[in-house]
Image (tube, rainbow, N blue to C red):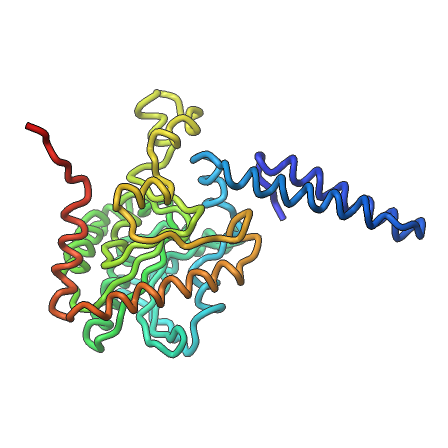
Length: 318
């Protein structure tokens, strides 16, 4: 599995352990004590490194190519899934997937951005950057959920909406704006989860939820650190500095009341143990849905309005 630069000390130690195991097998010698010591050292090193990650290092985990995507969550946690296609205007956008499904026998409308693993898949999925028809498909499915009184779950992992000329020709900005307006007025509970990278309006178009959650090593920001560095510092290579300034990781955003809950990940990130990560996510989704069900149906819109209305509010001292 591809490792990240800050994981190099861990990788070297793990390689040493594998070398000792191979030597033990080849030479028929007992090296259990030495191996156990190194295993203990490796666990301590992992705990120390992952407990002290900076914003840029968390960004690298959020963008890891093996990180679980929407279809991975559906495969692991959703039963009776029926995918729906098309926006009924132009075409189907594979960068957004959605449909009916059950989580622990509770029916949901599940909608999420989808990236690919291979180059061919990424081209098909447009690297997880939706066209306007993707957002229109998502809205169509949300309206279906409202019709059948089903909660909506959105899973967000996108660098942003596709910025190409053809997307602008088909009203990309309008599609995003309409989603914001219509999600705000939806009469069913909405749970939105940032599972990897939540970038700009492309993420927010699926993110107007009654509850907004973030995976532990995900990021959620108005702009990428590279874009921020280019604008503020006139140098995109200053992305690490920009990442720290943006304060777009889960703990910062929870402190600012931009998100409601953090989904814990296995040590090293969701890609290290996808099953555990998906189990944690499922648990958080169901617990937050349970809290939302205590709200009267008529109050879902008001709760959502108040939630977003107070983001960025400040008190002025006389």
